[in-house]
Image 1 (cartoon, rainbow, N blue to C red):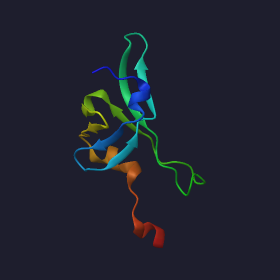
Image 2 (cartoon, rainbow, N blue to C red):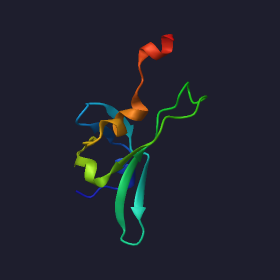
Image 3 (cartoon, helix red, strand yellow):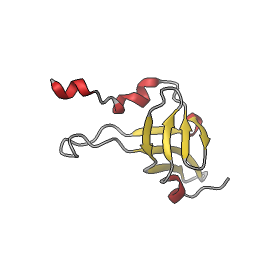
Image 4 (cartoon, one colour):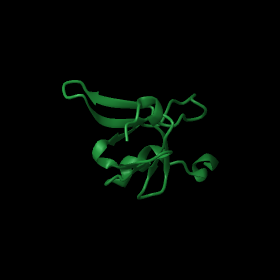
Length: 96
């Protein structure tokens, strides 16, 4: 299957290990000498409606991509902290 960048931006990224929806592809890294895609980037979620900045971006290497389907991109992180570091949103933190 051939997929353009505009098609990738419409696909939701899901981690198979945790079941978390990571977001949508916002950017890609390309090696200009070989012309190959190195990684997909999902921007971090805004904190406090963007007033406090953003969480860390999630960089997904091509080796972590399990499947690119019609609507979703399934990824499998070997290290769970890479995936959940910027997605740790707990309601208890709001009450403190």
